[in-house]
Image: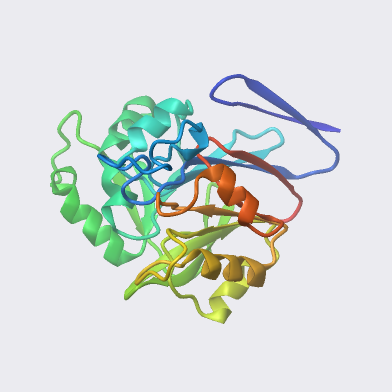
Length: 286
């Protein structure tokens, strides 16, 4: 029997595993669309909801991988404008890498705050994305890439990726091509977990990369058709085609029902994610 340990934001958690090589811990740091919920100035019933599960920061997820006798690996997917608040809320003090799905500001705007991780680790933070996205990061944070390392500037090492699988600290990452309207974006699969946000269309051969995951995450913003995002029914269809035992919806807007009502109308095995949701996935083969 093996005991795998890690510290959560609130307490220390212990899991005893029998012949398992690793555990994936997934923490939803944000599950809202680009405006977050509540939307500034809105008085709709979702924005006015007293249910904490209806309070949504911009979408981001932390994937932590725990192996016996090794320090856990922490991989962040997207670093939007709520990055600092999310790191503080969930007690995150180290990252092995940041994956970027695409260059929209609700997915990259928080990168300035990697400076705190620079202070803690005394080294740059590794950021992985397509070259087009890295170019946008360099333009947005031009002051961080001048070649002059002034104290307090964020320091990042940019890694250009494509559709070829790669590894971060021994954790295999499989990029998945999708389309956000006319913009090519990436989803990611690692071990038993698949993540796909801001998607409107995806080819079957790319969707195949997610088949076999235990937990699948896909985005939707509203019930009615949208020009650059899946509608709720389209997201449900994608989830059924992937066939994961559990699917969670993310990047949700106030145009959808409140969390409690949304749970009631979704098919079995498909649920809305919420900020702070934690999932543990034992995994024996990567």
